[in-house]
Length: 387
Image (tube, rainbow, N blue to C red):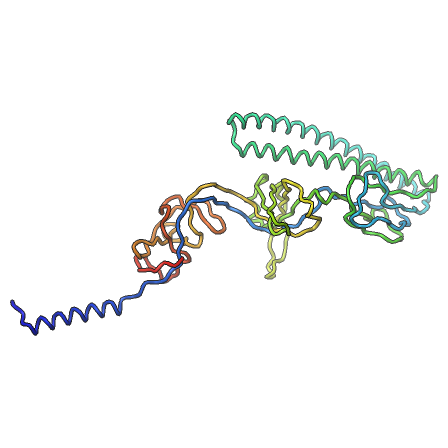
Protein backbone atom coordinates (compact mmCIF):
# COMPACT_ATOMS: atom_id res chain seq x y z
CA UNK A 1 0.00 0.00 0.00
CA UNK A 2 1.43 3.34 -1.07
CA UNK A 3 0.86 6.21 1.31
CA UNK A 4 0.04 9.59 0.00
CA UNK A 5 2.20 12.55 0.73
CA UNK A 6 -0.32 13.82 3.28
CA UNK A 7 -0.37 10.45 5.06
CA UNK A 8 3.39 10.28 5.19
CA UNK A 9 3.61 13.74 6.71
CA UNK A 10 0.96 12.80 9.29
CA UNK A 11 2.81 9.58 10.23
CA UNK A 12 6.11 11.42 10.63
CA UNK A 13 4.37 14.07 12.75
CA UNK A 14 2.90 11.40 15.06
CA UNK A 15 6.29 9.69 15.45
CA UNK A 16 8.01 12.96 16.25
CA UNK A 17 5.29 13.89 18.74
CA UNK A 18 5.57 10.47 20.43
CA UNK A 19 9.34 10.81 20.62
CA UNK A 20 9.03 14.31 22.12
CA UNK A 21 6.47 13.08 24.67
CA UNK A 22 8.79 10.16 25.59
CA UNK A 23 11.72 12.46 26.34
CA UNK A 24 9.49 15.01 28.14
CA UNK A 25 7.76 12.56 30.46
CA UNK A 26 10.67 10.11 30.93
CA UNK A 27 11.86 10.16 34.60
CA UNK A 28 15.07 12.16 35.00
CA UNK A 29 18.13 10.35 36.41
CA UNK A 30 18.25 10.25 40.23
CA UNK A 31 21.25 12.11 41.72
CA UNK A 32 23.17 9.84 44.11
CA UNK A 33 26.33 10.07 46.19
CA UNK A 34 28.99 7.62 45.13
CA UNK A 35 32.39 6.20 46.06
CA UNK A 36 34.98 3.98 44.40
CA UNK A 37 35.73 0.41 45.48
CA UNK A 38 39.42 0.30 46.35
CA UNK A 39 42.09 -1.60 48.23
CA UNK A 40 43.85 -0.33 51.31
CA UNK A 41 44.46 -0.80 55.04
CA UNK A 42 41.45 -1.43 57.28
CA UNK A 43 41.02 -1.44 61.03
CA UNK A 44 38.16 -2.61 63.23
CA UNK A 45 38.24 -0.37 66.28
CA UNK A 46 36.29 0.56 69.39
CA UNK A 47 36.30 4.21 70.40
CA UNK A 48 36.05 5.26 74.03
CA UNK A 49 36.87 8.08 76.40
CA UNK A 50 39.49 7.43 79.05
CA UNK A 51 41.34 9.03 81.93
CA UNK A 52 44.94 8.68 82.99
CA UNK A 53 46.07 7.54 86.39
CA UNK A 54 49.43 6.96 88.00
CA UNK A 55 50.48 3.34 87.63
CA UNK A 56 51.65 2.76 91.20
CA UNK A 57 49.89 5.24 93.47
CA UNK A 58 50.57 5.12 97.21
CA UNK A 59 48.23 6.70 99.71
CA UNK A 60 50.28 7.45 102.81
CA UNK A 61 47.94 7.28 105.80
CA UNK A 62 48.29 8.19 109.47
CA UNK A 63 49.57 5.08 111.27
CA UNK A 64 48.20 6.31 114.60
CA UNK A 65 45.64 8.74 115.96
CA UNK A 66 47.07 12.03 117.12
CA UNK A 67 47.91 15.66 116.38
CA UNK A 68 49.15 16.15 112.81
CA UNK A 69 52.05 18.56 112.53
CA UNK A 70 51.57 20.99 109.61
CA UNK A 71 52.72 19.38 106.35
CA UNK A 72 55.46 21.46 104.73
CA UNK A 73 55.38 19.65 101.38
CA UNK A 74 53.50 21.00 98.36
CA UNK A 75 51.81 19.11 95.54
CA UNK A 76 54.39 18.37 92.84
CA UNK A 77 57.35 18.20 95.23
CA UNK A 78 59.76 15.30 94.74
CA UNK A 79 60.31 12.91 97.63
CA UNK A 80 62.78 10.10 98.19
CA UNK A 81 62.03 6.70 99.62
CA UNK A 82 62.33 6.90 103.39
CA UNK A 83 62.04 10.70 103.57
CA UNK A 84 59.64 12.24 106.11
CA UNK A 85 56.35 13.42 104.58
CA UNK A 86 54.43 14.08 107.81
CA UNK A 87 54.79 13.89 111.60
CA UNK A 88 52.23 12.97 114.26
CA UNK A 89 52.13 13.58 117.98
CA UNK A 90 50.18 10.55 119.12
CA UNK A 91 47.89 10.74 122.11
CA UNK A 92 49.01 8.89 125.20
CA UNK A 93 47.55 5.41 125.29
CA UNK A 94 46.03 3.66 128.26
CA UNK A 95 46.78 0.01 128.93
CA UNK A 96 43.97 -1.25 126.65
CA UNK A 97 44.93 1.02 123.78
CA UNK A 98 48.57 0.03 124.21
CA UNK A 99 47.63 -3.63 123.80
CA UNK A 100 45.60 -2.75 120.68
CA UNK A 101 48.57 -0.88 119.25
CA UNK A 102 50.78 -3.86 119.92
CA UNK A 103 48.26 -6.10 118.15
CA UNK A 104 48.15 -3.79 115.12
CA UNK A 105 51.92 -3.85 114.98
CA UNK A 106 51.80 -7.65 115.02
CA UNK A 107 49.20 -7.65 112.24
CA UNK A 108 51.40 -5.28 110.22
CA UNK A 109 54.31 -7.68 110.72
CA UNK A 110 52.16 -10.52 109.33
CA UNK A 111 51.15 -8.31 106.36
CA UNK A 112 54.82 -7.63 105.71
CA UNK A 113 55.58 -11.36 105.70
CA UNK A 114 52.68 -11.93 103.28
CA UNK A 115 53.93 -9.13 100.98
CA UNK A 116 57.40 -10.67 100.98
CA UNK A 117 55.94 -14.05 100.01
CA UNK A 118 53.85 -12.43 97.24
CA UNK A 119 56.91 -10.66 95.88
CA UNK A 120 58.88 -13.90 95.80
CA UNK A 121 56.03 -15.59 93.94
CA UNK A 122 55.87 -12.70 91.47
CA UNK A 123 59.62 -12.92 90.92
CA UNK A 124 59.38 -16.65 90.16
CA UNK A 125 56.47 -16.09 87.73
CA UNK A 126 58.41 -13.31 86.01
CA UNK A 127 61.48 -15.51 85.65
CA UNK A 128 59.37 -18.21 83.99
CA UNK A 129 57.75 -15.65 81.64
CA UNK A 130 61.17 -14.25 80.74
CA UNK A 131 62.40 -17.72 79.79
CA UNK A 132 59.25 -18.35 77.74
CA UNK A 133 59.64 -15.00 75.97
CA UNK A 134 63.24 -15.81 75.14
CA UNK A 135 62.15 -19.15 73.62
CA UNK A 136 59.37 -17.48 71.63
CA UNK A 137 61.79 -14.84 70.35
CA UNK A 138 64.08 -17.54 69.02
CA UNK A 139 61.14 -19.45 67.51
CA UNK A 140 59.75 -16.29 65.91
CA UNK A 141 63.13 -15.48 64.34
CA UNK A 142 63.08 -18.97 62.86
CA UNK A 143 59.49 -18.55 61.58
CA UNK A 144 58.17 -21.35 63.81
CA UNK A 145 55.45 -19.25 65.51
CA UNK A 146 53.20 -16.36 64.52
CA UNK A 147 53.91 -12.72 65.24
CA UNK A 148 50.79 -12.58 67.42
CA UNK A 149 52.07 -15.37 69.70
CA UNK A 150 55.44 -13.62 69.96
CA UNK A 151 53.83 -10.27 70.82
CA UNK A 152 51.55 -11.88 73.42
CA UNK A 153 54.58 -13.48 75.10
CA UNK A 154 56.35 -10.12 75.07
CA UNK A 155 53.27 -8.35 76.49
CA UNK A 156 52.93 -10.98 79.22
CA UNK A 157 56.58 -10.53 80.20
CA UNK A 158 56.18 -6.74 80.32
CA UNK A 159 53.03 -7.03 82.44
CA UNK A 160 54.72 -9.41 84.87
CA UNK A 161 57.70 -7.06 85.15
CA UNK A 162 55.35 -4.31 86.27
CA UNK A 163 53.57 -6.69 88.65
CA UNK A 164 56.92 -7.71 90.11
CA UNK A 165 57.81 -4.04 90.58
CA UNK A 166 54.41 -3.43 92.21
CA UNK A 167 54.95 -6.43 94.51
CA UNK A 168 58.39 -5.12 95.47
CA UNK A 169 56.86 -1.72 96.20
CA UNK A 170 54.15 -3.47 98.22
CA UNK A 171 56.86 -5.02 100.38
CA UNK A 172 58.39 -1.61 100.98
CA UNK A 173 54.99 -0.11 101.82
CA UNK A 174 54.23 -2.96 104.24
CA UNK A 175 57.65 -2.59 105.81
CA UNK A 176 57.14 1.13 106.39
CA UNK A 177 53.63 0.53 107.72
CA UNK A 178 54.96 -2.02 110.18
CA UNK A 179 57.75 0.33 111.18
CA UNK A 180 55.28 3.15 111.81
CA UNK A 181 53.00 0.98 113.96
CA UNK A 182 55.92 -0.45 115.82
CA UNK A 183 57.18 3.09 116.34
CA UNK A 184 53.87 3.92 118.03
CA UNK A 185 54.45 1.16 120.53
CA UNK A 186 57.99 2.33 121.08
CA UNK A 187 56.89 5.97 121.27
CA UNK A 188 54.80 5.32 124.33
CA UNK A 189 58.08 4.84 126.12
CA UNK A 190 60.14 7.49 124.36
CA UNK A 191 57.41 10.20 123.94
CA UNK A 192 58.82 11.12 120.49
CA UNK A 193 56.74 12.18 117.41
CA UNK A 194 55.84 9.46 114.93
CA UNK A 195 57.41 10.19 111.56
CA UNK A 196 55.45 9.13 108.46
CA UNK A 197 57.88 8.11 105.71
CA UNK A 198 57.53 7.90 101.95
CA UNK A 199 57.46 4.27 100.76
CA UNK A 200 58.89 5.06 97.29
CA UNK A 201 60.71 7.63 95.20
CA UNK A 202 58.19 9.87 93.49
CA UNK A 203 56.30 13.13 93.62
CA UNK A 204 53.51 14.41 95.81
CA UNK A 205 50.29 14.03 93.81
CA UNK A 206 47.86 15.21 96.46
CA UNK A 207 47.90 16.43 100.05
CA UNK A 208 44.76 15.37 101.91
CA UNK A 209 45.57 17.07 105.20
CA UNK A 210 47.88 20.09 105.29
CA UNK A 211 47.03 22.04 108.43
CA UNK A 212 47.50 20.96 112.01
CA UNK A 213 44.55 18.97 113.30
CA UNK A 214 43.69 15.79 115.13
CA UNK A 215 43.43 12.85 112.73
CA UNK A 216 42.44 9.27 113.28
CA UNK A 217 44.52 6.22 112.49
CA UNK A 218 44.19 5.33 108.82
CA UNK A 219 43.30 8.86 107.68
CA UNK A 220 44.90 9.57 104.27
CA UNK A 221 47.57 12.26 104.46
CA UNK A 222 49.54 12.33 101.18
CA UNK A 223 49.33 10.59 97.78
CA UNK A 224 52.72 9.73 96.27
CA UNK A 225 53.56 8.29 92.87
CA UNK A 226 55.50 8.74 89.66
CA UNK A 227 53.35 10.88 87.32
CA UNK A 228 55.42 9.81 84.32
CA UNK A 229 54.35 6.15 84.78
CA UNK A 230 50.84 6.52 83.41
CA UNK A 231 48.15 3.97 82.59
CA UNK A 232 44.84 4.63 80.82
CA UNK A 233 41.40 3.61 82.11
CA UNK A 234 38.85 3.36 79.27
CA UNK A 235 35.23 2.55 80.00
CA UNK A 236 33.21 0.75 77.29
CA UNK A 237 29.74 -0.74 77.07
CA UNK A 238 29.81 -4.29 78.42
CA UNK A 239 28.56 -5.57 75.03
CA UNK A 240 31.64 -4.01 73.40
CA UNK A 241 34.11 -4.89 76.16
CA UNK A 242 33.70 -8.64 75.59
CA UNK A 243 35.37 -8.16 72.18
CA UNK A 244 38.52 -6.68 73.75
CA UNK A 245 41.45 -8.95 74.65
CA UNK A 246 44.69 -8.26 76.54
CA UNK A 247 47.37 -7.43 74.01
CA UNK A 248 45.08 -5.43 71.67
CA UNK A 249 46.79 -2.32 70.34
CA UNK A 250 45.52 1.03 71.64
CA UNK A 251 45.92 4.44 69.99
CA UNK A 252 45.61 7.46 72.30
CA UNK A 253 44.24 10.61 70.61
CA UNK A 254 43.04 14.09 71.63
CA UNK A 255 45.23 14.16 74.73
CA UNK A 256 46.66 17.61 73.99
CA UNK A 257 49.89 16.60 72.25
CA UNK A 258 50.67 16.83 68.55
CA UNK A 259 51.16 13.10 67.96
CA UNK A 260 49.21 9.97 68.73
CA UNK A 261 50.42 7.74 71.56
CA UNK A 262 50.66 3.97 71.28
CA UNK A 263 49.70 1.51 73.99
CA UNK A 264 48.42 -1.98 74.64
CA UNK A 265 45.47 -3.42 76.56
CA UNK A 266 46.70 -4.75 79.90
CA UNK A 267 43.50 -6.06 81.51
CA UNK A 268 39.74 -6.14 80.92
CA UNK A 269 37.69 -5.40 84.03
CA UNK A 270 36.08 -8.54 85.52
CA UNK A 271 32.89 -6.72 86.55
CA UNK A 272 30.67 -4.04 85.05
CA UNK A 273 29.36 -0.91 86.74
CA UNK A 274 26.33 1.27 86.09
CA UNK A 275 26.83 4.69 84.53
CA UNK A 276 24.20 7.20 83.42
CA UNK A 277 24.74 8.51 79.90
CA UNK A 278 24.28 12.12 78.77
CA UNK A 279 20.76 11.16 77.63
CA UNK A 280 19.88 9.91 81.11
CA UNK A 281 20.06 6.21 80.19
CA UNK A 282 21.65 3.78 82.64
CA UNK A 283 24.35 1.71 80.94
CA UNK A 284 26.46 -1.23 82.03
CA UNK A 285 30.08 -0.37 81.37
CA UNK A 286 33.43 -2.09 81.90
CA UNK A 287 36.84 -0.55 82.60
CA UNK A 288 39.62 -1.44 80.14
CA UNK A 289 43.12 -0.85 81.51
CA UNK A 290 45.84 0.05 78.98
CA UNK A 291 49.51 0.86 79.40
CA UNK A 292 51.56 3.18 77.19
CA UNK A 293 54.33 1.67 75.09
CA UNK A 294 56.47 4.69 75.95
CA UNK A 295 56.06 7.01 78.94
CA UNK A 296 54.77 10.48 78.07
CA UNK A 297 55.88 13.06 80.65
CA UNK A 298 53.38 15.67 79.45
CA UNK A 299 50.53 13.50 80.70
CA UNK A 300 49.61 13.73 84.37
CA UNK A 301 47.21 12.06 86.74
CA UNK A 302 43.47 12.16 85.89
CA UNK A 303 43.92 13.68 82.39
CA UNK A 304 41.17 13.11 79.82
CA UNK A 305 42.06 11.28 76.58
CA UNK A 306 40.31 9.68 73.63
CA UNK A 307 41.28 6.07 72.94
CA UNK A 308 40.85 3.77 69.95
CA UNK A 309 41.22 0.03 70.64
CA UNK A 310 42.24 -1.94 67.55
CA UNK A 311 40.37 -5.27 67.49
CA UNK A 312 41.43 -6.41 64.00
CA UNK A 313 43.44 -4.90 61.18
CA UNK A 314 44.69 -5.79 57.71
CA UNK A 315 47.16 -4.04 55.43
CA UNK A 316 45.50 -4.52 52.00
CA UNK A 317 41.85 -5.49 51.58
CA UNK A 318 39.09 -4.64 49.09
CA UNK A 319 36.69 -2.23 50.80
CA UNK A 320 33.63 -0.05 50.38
CA UNK A 321 32.03 2.60 52.61
CA UNK A 322 29.85 1.08 55.35
CA UNK A 323 27.13 3.55 54.36
CA UNK A 324 26.80 1.87 50.94
CA UNK A 325 25.65 -1.45 52.45
CA UNK A 326 22.08 -2.40 53.29
CA UNK A 327 20.33 -5.59 54.32
CA UNK A 328 18.28 -7.61 51.85
CA UNK A 329 16.69 -11.03 51.61
CA UNK A 330 19.99 -12.62 50.61
CA UNK A 331 22.21 -10.81 53.12
CA UNK A 332 24.22 -7.68 52.41
CA UNK A 333 23.48 -5.67 49.25
CA UNK A 334 24.76 -2.53 47.54
CA UNK A 335 24.16 -0.66 44.29
CA UNK A 336 26.89 -0.69 41.64
CA UNK A 337 26.74 2.07 39.01
CA UNK A 338 27.03 0.56 35.52
CA UNK A 339 26.28 2.45 32.28
CA UNK A 340 24.47 5.17 34.20
CA UNK A 341 22.19 2.74 36.05
CA UNK A 342 22.13 1.44 39.63
CA UNK A 343 22.50 -2.35 39.69
CA UNK A 344 21.59 -4.22 42.87
CA UNK A 345 24.40 -6.61 43.89
CA UNK A 346 24.65 -9.20 46.64
CA UNK A 347 28.03 -8.95 48.38
CA UNK A 348 29.94 -10.93 50.99
CA UNK A 349 31.23 -8.74 53.83
CA UNK A 350 34.25 -9.45 56.05
CA UNK A 351 35.67 -7.02 58.60
CA UNK A 352 33.53 -3.97 59.32
CA UNK A 353 35.27 -0.83 60.52
CA UNK A 354 33.74 2.46 61.58
CA UNK A 355 33.79 3.96 58.06
CA UNK A 356 34.90 1.21 55.67
CA UNK A 357 33.97 -2.49 55.35
CA UNK A 358 35.84 -5.35 53.70
CA UNK A 359 34.13 -6.95 50.67
CA UNK A 360 35.03 -10.57 49.99
CA UNK A 361 32.92 -11.06 46.83
CA UNK A 362 30.40 -9.24 44.64
CA UNK A 363 32.34 -6.17 43.42
CA UNK A 364 35.67 -5.39 41.74
CA UNK A 365 38.40 -2.91 42.44
CA UNK A 366 37.67 0.41 40.72
CA UNK A 367 33.88 0.04 40.45
CA UNK A 368 31.70 2.90 41.65
CA UNK A 369 28.99 2.24 44.25
CA UNK A 370 26.10 4.29 45.62
CA UNK A 371 26.62 5.75 49.11
CA UNK A 372 23.60 6.34 51.38
CA UNK A 373 21.05 4.70 49.02
CA UNK A 374 17.50 6.01 49.54
CA UNK A 375 14.24 4.06 49.48
CA UNK A 376 13.44 5.65 46.09
CA UNK A 377 16.40 3.93 44.43
CA UNK A 378 15.46 0.71 42.62
CA UNK A 379 17.42 -1.87 40.65
CA UNK A 380 18.08 -0.67 37.10
CA UNK A 381 17.11 2.95 37.76
CA UNK A 382 19.01 5.67 35.88
CA UNK A 383 21.26 7.66 38.19
CA UNK A 384 23.71 10.54 38.09
CA UNK A 385 26.77 9.88 40.25
CA UNK A 386 28.06 12.62 42.52
CA UNK A 387 31.35 12.24 44.41
